[in-house]
Image 1 (cartoon, rainbow, N blue to C red):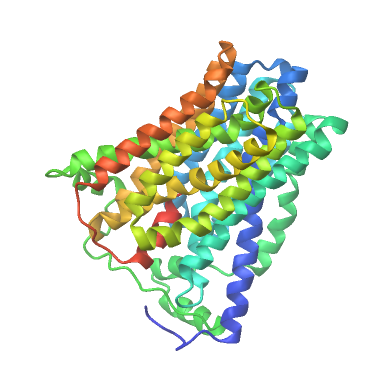
Image 2: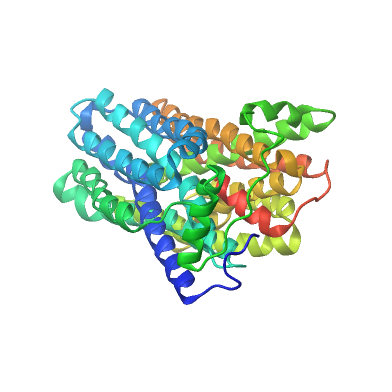
Length: 444
């Protein structure tokens, strides 16, 4: 690290806290907007809102995840042009206004457009927020800071369940999407209080400005990247390196594991309340499952990193997916309510961090010069699973096979267990844990 200050100063800790709090709030609303559709979906189907059918509901869930795919892939390029701060502001503005469009929609088509636009903003926000907090994290606290940030996404999922429970029955489903417009109030605060990314300033060659900003806030200046050998080359140009020699097989295995993992994550996130209601639970219990699932996600994010440090990310990823598959399959079995609550919580613990461990595995086992490309494309290929998962749940319900929903998602977990296990056997461990933690979470 280039250091503009030998140790974190009180000012440095203050600005780090400010950046984390602002980014945490933005990601909280990101999670709220992502999970709100799944939370209100049982009500929308029961009341035939907008004339929606189960098949259309699955399509609508996929629209948002497709938007996230495009937003995530475009985020790096856009941020390199306009800056991390401006992109964060744009993403929050976009998904907030898009939620307003959903609330005003009078047809499935307009609602679908709103969810797609929201997905663009949601997909671009998280990697940008991670970059911001990484820049201003105190020395030696980068992984912990990112872990804290990641809890906001699941806190948003918890909030979505309570919004649905408190507002939807008395005020209708549109009220939930109006709540998702509230993040617009955060935009002026971000513009006024959030500093620009130090990494962006360095990448733009504005080293003096970055050094001055780092000195003023008492933080370390990130290590500038040597781009002399790759200037002008797009990330796509590095992709062939992922297939040279015997690397093609492990690359495909990583991509397949990521596809299955995100199919599982977004399929369950979209359909959990509806499938649980289909299993005979009332709406209140179904939304409690959302709360427990996301509480498990918070715990899992904090536990998985420590477990991976001790036992290795590839092993933890495979074990986590196997346990996830078992938990998801058990949800198709009618159990006492307390046992079901426990299974949902534990499934959240394993599922929400298993995918992150795929990125950690790719980062650990990729050569340094192609690591960013390897992690980025593994994430990007996985996003196709995120599109497919909600659609699959909708098709099963439309065909009156909702009882097969959890089984289908469990099979995706089994497949990811096999793929990441096979891929992990092929290459040796290569890199440091700190780099792994930052890059793995940044892809998610």
